[in-house]
Length: 294
Image 1 (cartoon, rainbow, N blue to C red):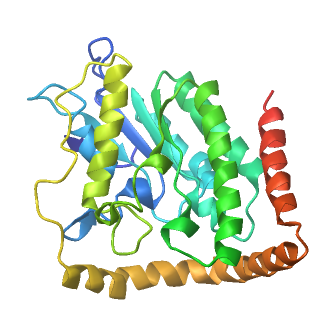
Image 2: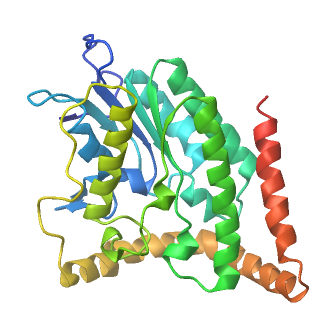
Image 3: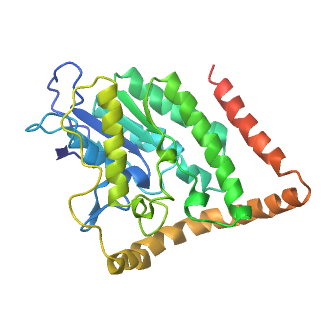
């Protein structure tokens, strides 16, 4: 597999046999970047694992990973989509939205418009699309209810939008939120928010199966678990104390004030017996955002 850069001359221009997925581009955030699946100083991740299994043995897919930690849906159209289109992908993964829910300025309408524009451009240029709904970060982190419920409400809205846009753009969809993250702790990395190496391999394995069911000629499926043993506790703790701490700190400056305000509002609403009203408002906002697409 060739991992390509982000310049305009990444693709050879050679035609592939009909139906083959020889050029794969991944867009998104830290999940698709590969956080949690370390290979020395860098990340591998589910998209890279899947790329190895797209073509018959002896051939390598051209793979470009444009995802990066902290990316929002608004970063798709402004930063990632132009490079993705330049690669002329036959397969494009768009898995994003979790960071939107962790921002004080969360806006489901903006999220909907950005995702729709990105998926529309990629499918309009002939790419097979991969999408996924995401697990609720509050549940993964086991946050207290006043903090967890607003995040769960936002994640439900994002997933509602992703499901609708999956149908709209005829994407291959993985119900990522339904994988047993809490029941099988080994699928999560030390930060409890990103998949472990085994979790990333499981995602790649499931996507491969869905593409095969859709009739695409592929190589042998990737293993559902990495061949190498997982890092030990000391390595996990070292990552959290260094890179993981920076990740948390970067989000605290943006997220924490807004999240505390949401928690206060949620507590007041529950005391008044009106917390369900917030759920209804968010669901209505998601429906209105989708209706505005026509």
